[in-house]
Length: 179
Image 1: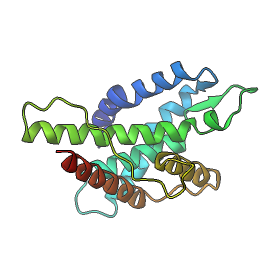
Image 2: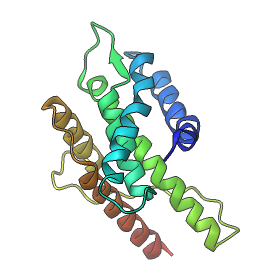
Image 3: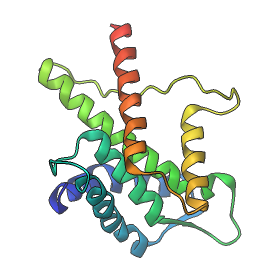
């Protein structure tokens, strides 16, 4: 993805999600310098893929992985000093995962429109049943991203792109079952 493509994702996916989270959680604040670093980190992760591939074009799962890791690494949200809760401490990871899911959903919708011009619904990624009953699959992914970042060991983008690939496959199977 080049800077022009990133700006499209930024305008239509990342910025609206940031605004939504700021409007619904008064205990987080946006650090503009860190937010601007998202593009730099995205490009670093994109280069990781490009160095291993014959083609410089990334598929949707790799784009989602790059965006997820870039947001996790940039950490655009901070918390107000006296308001550290488990939810706002995970705000960056929630943002990273949601933006990545939004990317996948936008591509799925584009695919559906191509095969069915009258299609107008917005598909939603389906998450499998969690292994631990008290946590959702989404919460488990957020926790994994958080603890990986805390250990200064974010997952490799190849690994994360596979997670997004399997989420899309799972979602498409659910859509097919639903008719």
